[in-house]
Amino acid sequence: MASGSRTKTASTYLECTECGNTTQIHRKKSRLKEKDHIKHMYCFKCINTTAHREVKEDAFVPKWLKEWHTQQEGTDTND
Image 1: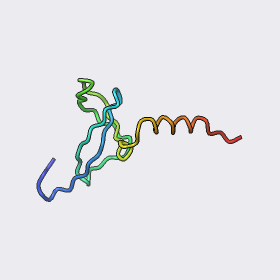
Image 2: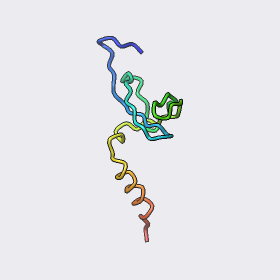
Image 3: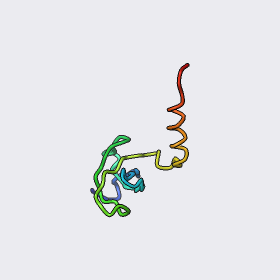
Image 4: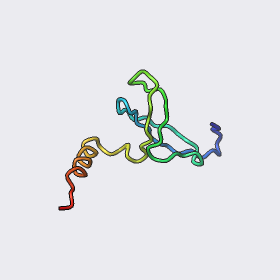
C-alpha cells in the first residue's frame, strides 16, 4: 500500500472470530470494505492465522451490551 503524504487512509477494526481480539488496521479510503467482511490474518493472541471479521463502529460497543441486545431480539415476539 502506498503511504505517501497524499494517500488518504481510514482506520477500521477487525475482530478475531476465534478469541474476539480486536485489531486496528488502516486501509485506503478508496479500498474500504463493508461491515462483516472476512479477512484472514495472524492473531497474536491465538498464535495462528484466523478469520477476522470487519466490525467498523461496533468495535467500541461493550460485550455486555451486545449480549443484552441479542437476548432482547430473542425475547421480542409479536403476540
